Length: 232
Image (spheres, rainbow, N blue to C red):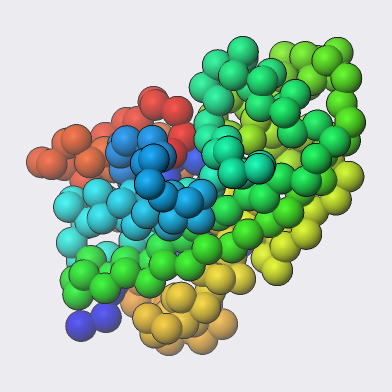
């Protein structure tokens, strides 16, 4: 039986905005997983693993849905740059990346919770950073506070002023959800955004993608509860 719901395993407003571009009803759930990297895996493997783990965490409360998980890891000279979480960590990240080309690995997973089949892809993006001075780094971080973003920058906002070039097969990957790749995965599951009868049966429990209607995997007895944690 085809899935009648799509759930985005993320509380990121930027991923919600991106997914909304496909004009398919969907709900949002907070996966709340440990996003730490493992010492024996590459940056690409980390992004792919976390994308699938997010989707499978949400499958516990949405067993009838197609679940979308995504994660991003930045890498320079073999060093992984995840979410800085603090101002000091963000300063260190940008100081190391200035004047360099950094690869951002964006993993995306489409999990069919009914069958347990996960389709997982990685979309790399090469980003050239300006040779920023300490004052520029400090001013940027104070204005934008991108402490929940891998690589300490939001290219969809003021962070675009930090970079000299962006190279990727999927322009939405750097923002956090590669829509070209996701569309391919959805089509493989029989959901083509351009074919009306393939999306007409999909329903959203929340009636939309409002930020105040987010499922929480910690609340196994309810499909709806407020989430106030940093974006996943």
